[in-house]
Image (cartoon, rainbow, N blue to C red; front, top):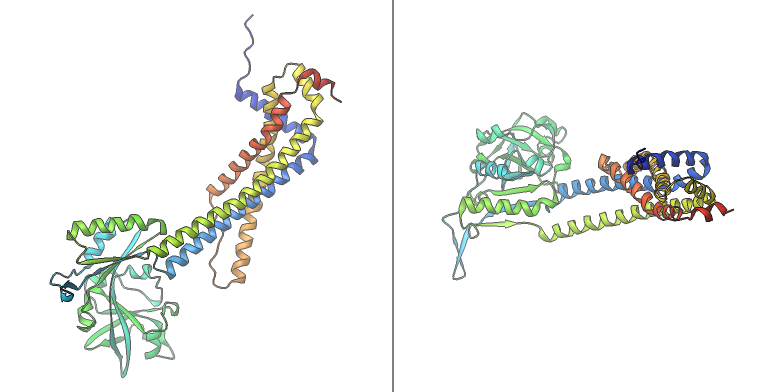
Length: 420
């Protein structure tokens, strides 16, 4: 008669899991108490991760919207120095819209625009006002977070056709039509003898210090900027989508400049906020480490609770373990049973905790939005967060359940049966 093959590890663990679940069901109060620690730990982990991800996304939006740490500016140099004397350069770089398109294609996840600024006297009917003129590209709307309250922003066709159109800010519109600034949409304003059709009016939030300003296609800059104001050619402004992309973006821009202009350093300068960028990156790293420490403590507390409960279970079931060993159960079977109980506890606890954690995260952010007017903070729900929380909880259950399981598996059958 052939010898009976021992059960495989997988089938042995499945049997142990079924036995462990039945044992847990026989002691519901103890099971609930042991599961409670994991529920609290996972709920805290999911809530902290979801709120933390939302806070990080909010911080990134505010950094991108209100600072220039994600911006690279490439500015033409107008003079060269000889014997301490500044002499005008004859080879000044003059960026065009096609150059901006080339850089846009070469750089991924970045915004590229041109910007040439100067002051001008702007006239509407009999009213005149001094304003800052920005000759630019349509990408400036997203790059500088500009929103049209009425009408639209500049379009590619405006630049391509050198259209005589403009987008004005709320401050300038208010100077011309104080009672109803929006009424200026579709009207005409003048810079010297150049008529500009108003196609958009920016929202009041885009007014910088209340300075009257307007944007025009970069292709008509020579017509609307005076010789003094237009002496400096357009600068190229490139903005990374994320803070972490700044290094790669700068390298890509420098590579393009080298291919396009050869030895470009004497003719162009690159400006970045590297000091502030390093501060932002360090702040984000500290924030992530702090959040990780808090969540780690929550899970460890839950794991200690599981270990205590399983150690108590080993002491209570010593005789049962001895009988199982005496009728043929191997040490591995007993080990698997107690590990299976730990996994069952953490699995159930992590599922309940994840639901509670998400509920808490969305409730917390809703309260923050209600209390802090204008704060666009929302909990960030991702499947990766849920998966990480559940895997971490089960791993904690296995780690803290291992010692009680080993202790149970190492009990001598005869001594265990004699235990009272």
